[in-house]
Amino acid sequence: MLEGYDVSKLSIGTLGSHSALNILKGAKDESFRTVVVCKHGDELVYERFRVADVMISVESFEELANDEIQERLLELNTILVPHGSFNAYIPTEKLLKLRVPMFGNKQLLVWETNRELQERWLRRAGLRLPKVFKSPDEIDCLVIVKFPGARGGRGYFLTSSPEDFWKKAESFLKTGVLREEDLRDVHIQEYVVGVNVYPSYFRSLLHEETELLAIDRRYEANVDALWKIPASEQLQLDLSPTYTVVGNIPLMLRESLLAEILRMGDAVVEASEKIAMPGIIGAFCLETVITENLEIYTFEISARIVAGTNVGIGTSPYAYLRHGENMFMGRRIALEIKEAAEQGRLEEVLT
Image 1: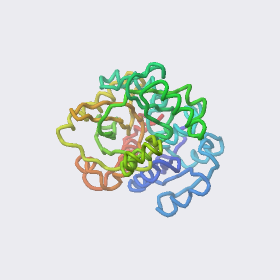
Image 2: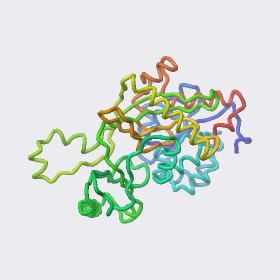
Image 3: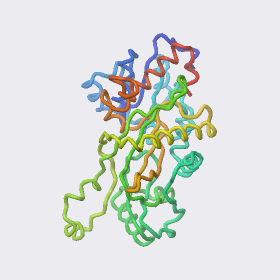
Image 4: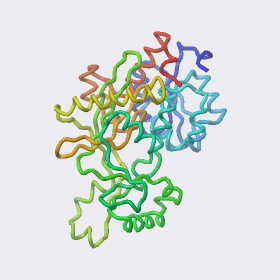
C-alpha cells in the first residue's frame, strides 16, 4: 500500500477519541495534513480545537475496517496512529487486516489485549509482577479483578475471598456493568498497596533509543472520591470502590526512582524484539504501583499511546528535558514519521 503513496503529501489519521487531540495536534505541529474518523456528533470536538483537516463521520469505530473508509484514507496517503479505542472497539482480526499503513507494531497490539501474553512479555523483561490467580476459588488475599480490553477500568473491583468475588460479580451483572462473557476472561491479580504510576515511553527505531516522555496517574471514579464520605456512611451505604478512569493527573517522580524506570523501559523493548521484530515502534506505557519500600510492581503494558500523555501536551517536563519546548507524545510520533519519510525509512516504522 505504501508504494502507492505520495510521500510528499502524507496525512496522519486516527479515531476520534482517547488521545486523538494529542495525536492530531502533534501532526499539525509537524506540518502534516490530519484526518479523524469520528462518531456522528463528536465532530464538534475536532472542529472546536481546529486539529482536523479532514473528518470522516461513522456510526461506530468498527467501520474503520470497511472498504470505503479504507479507500478514502488511502487516497489521502494516511498513516494511522493507534490508541486505546483501536483495541477496545475494533475486533483483533479486523485490526490485523487493515490495509491502511499503521504507525507501530500491530502484533504487539494483539499481545496487549491478552492478559496472559502481557504477563509473559513482562516476565521476559524481568519486571516485578503481582501474583496472578487462575480461578476465583484460589483467592486468599486482597485482589483486583479486571476484564479484557482497553475499557478504562470499568467493571474492575476489589475482593478478598471467593464468596465476595461472586457476590460482587453478580451485582455488576445485574446492573449491566459486566456481561456473562466478561467473567469467562476474568483476570485476578494481587492488589499491591502503593501509588499508581504510569510512565510513558517512546521507542525510536531511527535513533535507537527509548525515551521517557511523560509520567501520570489516573483519577478514577468512584475510588478517588470515597475518601470524601465518612467511613461510617460508607458502611451504611455498602459502597464498594470502582475504577472507571475519568481523567489523568501529571506526576513528577522522585529522581532517585528514574534510573529504574528507565531500565524497565529498556528491558521491555528488548523483550519485545524477541516477541515480534522489530519490537515496539513508538509509544508505549507501563502501568505500575510503587510501594512504601519503593519497590516497583508492573501490572500492565500498553503498546501504543495512552491517554495519560494528554496531560503533557505542550508542557511535559520529561519531554522538555529530552527535547526542549513544545514536545509531547503526539508530536514525537509525528516527528518520527516525518524523519522516516525524509530518510526513506517509512517501512521500518509502519505495519
